[in-house]
Length: 445
Image 1 (cartoon, helix red, strand yellow):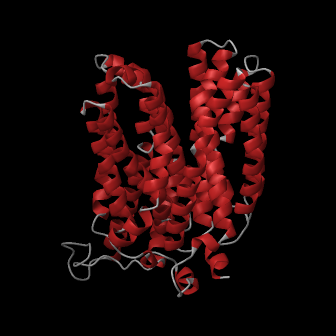
Image 2 (cartoon, helix red, strand yellow; image 1 turned 180 degrees about the vertical axis):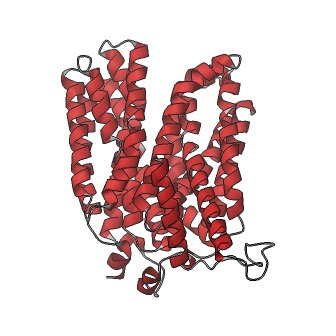
Image 3 (cartoon, helix red, strand yellow; image 1 turned 30 degrees about the vertical axis):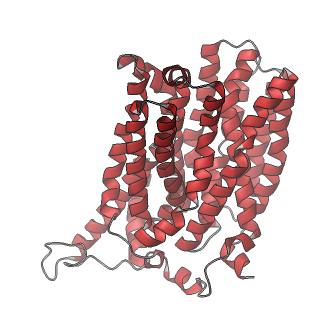
């Protein structure tokens, strides 16, 4: 892994030179360098800048889910501490995708005005503030408001991570998206696994157990501070051939692209499956007679599967002209997992958890396709915002509908049938989204 990253750092430095970043001068980055300083100094400066961006991407990704999964681990204690009703607690579980949809739309406009790095930095600040404040605001309304602040920071960072990757690493979209997705999966599973024992170790207060995650978010602010003043346009980092091919007409009308719509629906359906899995899979196993502790471990295994596969799948996707075969393979794993949950939920529990963990890796694949289906940084920003915002809106009803079906049918047959049924259109639109074309070309036509 280290040798791979070292090689990629060298390639990234070369790419930075190709994409039009002028070597730092005394006025724009090589402060204190004497006139005629060796080019190696400028190259070293760019290399360290690239490493700092890699660190920033990893730390940002680690912070994009703990605000959600740490709350899920302590939801019962939070309900008791704040006197929440069951309906309000249910609303709380639906807030993340709603915030991702609403606030994610703002990200491209903010990035054009302030620069994507500066907006991600502000997003990390918002996450830090929201996580630090929400346990101590003293009421349900304040708790929801502080959660929304953290989720706003997550939403804009969600949208802009593919833009950052495309801007800094245009020739390694797959590997860098894989690294980012792997860190995101690690942060998700880490918060779910250690929040409760860490809370116990810190004295047993749920307020401390939630607030401690603000420290990780604060660490993520630091590497992005160097990007706050960088407001160069995306074209400053695009390869020359991309700049030559970039449309010069009106702004991209993303809704004219069939690929953009296919990717948005694919993103929404995979998010639906992921939220249903996180919210209900442990209960399915428990109702089948699996002990509560084992059911929680099975859910953790499902989420941990995303750590290694999130690095492998994007790299594989970028080597294929069409990503449809990967979409179909992941969908087949999902269908097999749902069939197992229906036929023998307890008998093959570990196998079904592994299969559904593989199926949930449609998320890093979707992020990779966002970077591949647009040629320019501006196009990636618009496609990312459209696909994620529309997709998260699509995902909101899924977990709620599963709960309604479970309550009215008295079993898991209908909910599992719904999950399997949604996998079919997910595979279909994923194949369409994986075709080798760009949204700029489709929108122009």
